[in-house]
Structure formats: structure tokens, C-alpha cells
Image 1: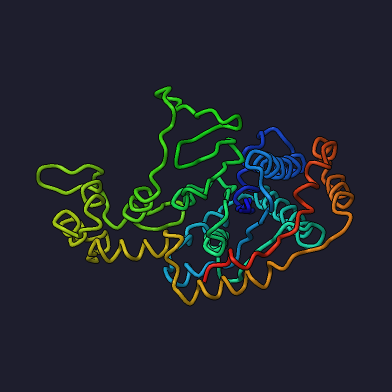
Image 2: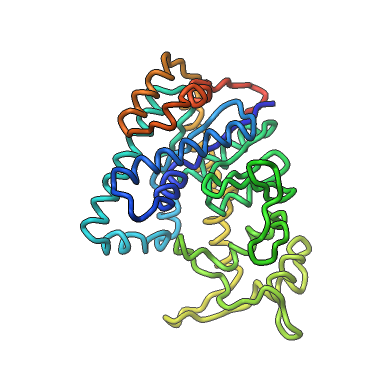
Length: 337
């Protein structure tokens, strides 16, 4: 059984960027973001005793064609940025592209990308194609919690927490405590979290709620999310009472909850992509998963570290080279049909 480290590359890099102190100049922030990104992968590699690292890259999302408002609000947000902020963005994307170029051309870890899919889709499909193996997703994106299972964990490289079905743990394997209550954070319920997001939507991605204002727990006269969720398999009174409700938006358009829920499920559920898209993503990934045989990976990594003044990482370059030079080994029995 192989353990794969699946890195949500852009998420990890830009979360690292926002963790930088405001007083840092732009070049220092760039170096900090690369340092935090690579250190997070290195920690996850050692904590999970992984065998191979896969960097999942972004493509243009098919969701933008399926649902026009999807992430559309981000265009206006980018346009509203100051000239200095736009200059900083350009510098960070240049550094990110440089990191990806190094990984593609000089390292033996896998870099997977599909022109019409997001990194989330790549990671979900990779797990599907390797059902007998263990997987650790490196990302702070809460969308991935829905994939957590007996053989899938999620590692947040910013907080250094590992999310599992048994609970949330730190780098030392100790339960992470809730700052408000002082109690260990509860183990996630992936199925419930997915259902709740499909119902409530996701403002960060501009996915609208299927039922605005719905309560988590119902009242005597109204079914809540918990009651509908518990009735999801039987599709009885509570499920239908919730899903057949209708509501009117601020434009006067009428919505049926079930219709908007099903729309959101396609957008949010990382196993619910259209079948033809799944086949295309799988085919694209298979073409990119051929074992690589780059030589002198450690020396090339030292040169990359020098470019961005990554002195602390350079001092431990052999530890990083250990996973950078590990190539993918295809096992026929792992590839799901």
C-alpha cells in the first residue's frame, strides 16, 4: 500500500502568502510563501511517512460554464485592487510559476493539471484512481473535508493540523483543542458537512444558498437541516418537507429548494462531476503520471533555493530532495475503472 501526498498547490502557496507579516517587503513575502509551502509539504511527508508527492495544479474550471456566477465576484475584487497590490500579485504569481516550472522540469514528484478542471477535481479523481492506497491532502480548503475517510486525511500546512475521522491532531499526534471551549476539536462528519454546504452555499465561491435562512435544527412547525439530513436515505416526510419548499429571491424569481440543492451538489460535491468530465480528467492525468527520471534533483533544488534566498531550507536540502526525487510508480491493481 502506497501513501500519496496530494498538494493543493495554489491554495497552499497563497495561504502561505497571507500568513506573511505585513511589515515584510514584497520580495521577503515571496520567499516566505515559498518557504512555508515547501516546509508544509516536507512536514506532511515526514508526519505521514509518504511515498510520493503529487502537486495538483489549477485549470480553467468547468464550473464557470455550468454556473455563470461561480467565482464571478473575484473579477471585480481583482479590479478594485490598488496598483501596489496588483504589482504584488504579479510578483507572487511569477514566483508561483517559477516553483511549478522547477517541479515540472527538475523534480520527480508528479505535477498534474487538466485544462478544464480545478486542483480539487484532480485530487478527488486521483484518490478515486488509487482506492487501495492512503492519501494525505495538503490544503487549508475546507471543501476537502468531504473526502476524509479511512484512507484519506487532510493536512493544513498553515495550522499544522491533521484532520482525520478520529479527530484533529497536531504534528505530535496530540488532539487539537478548541480555543473557546478548551475541549478537543470533534472528528468531522464528511457527509453532514457536504450536505450543509450544498444547502447553505459557499459565499467564497459565489455559490448561492439553496434555502436562505434555513435553521440547522427545526421547530415544531418547520423542518431543519438536521432533520432533513437524517431522512436523506428514506426520502420521507422531513426530506420532502424541506426539499419541496419554494422561496422567492430579491429579483422576484421563484426557487424550489431541491433544484438549487442539486445544482449546488454538482458544484460542491467533489465526486459529482459530470461523467464525461471525470473520464476526461482521468485520461489527462494518466498521460501525466508517467514515472520521471530527472537527475541531480538536490543540486537543482539548491540552485532554486539560491534564487529566492531560501537559506534555512537550503541548509536542509537533502531532506527536501528525498521527496523531490521520488518518482511515481504505477501499480496496475491501484487504478480504478
